[in-house]
Each structure stands twice: as C-alpha cells, then as structure tokens.
Amino acid sequence: MKINKLVRQWAIVVIVFWSASAISLAQQAMPKLQMAELTKKLQLTEQQQKQIAPLVAERDKKAEALETHSGIRFSFYLARRMI
Image (cartoon, rainbow, N blue to C red; front, side):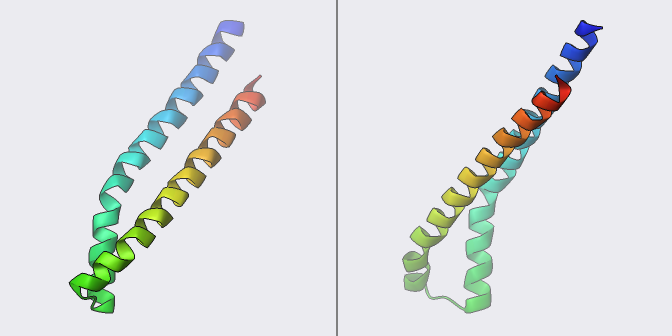
C-alpha cells in the first residue's frame, strides 16, 4: 500500500517537472517571435528594437521566475495532498 502511494507521488513530481521543462523550452523560442510581432505591429525601427530589447528581456526573466516559483509551490502542494 505504501509503495503504491510513493510511486504515485514520484509520478506526479516527475510529470510536473517534465511539464515545466517542456514549457521552458517552448518559452526560449518566444522572445524572438515576440520581438518580431512587436516590430510588425508597432512598425519599430532597428534603433527602437534595440532600445526595447532590454525591457522585453527583463520582462521575460521576471515572468520565468514567477512561473518557476509558482510551479515549485504547486509541486509542494501536490506532494502534501498525496501524503
């Protein structure tokens, strides 16, 4: 009985971390697409793109940190519920 519970807990943890890593990989491609979309919609010049690039990068870094923190909290929540 305890072994089944332990296997379920580990399976949940593995799935959560696998999902987080898959999302992370997908998000690595997003900044270039987002910059291209901003450039097109706002008709940005090359100089304007260079000016907003640090802002976009900072926003992405903060969003990633928030998602990582939220994912860790959710993992602990799931683990506690399973115990």
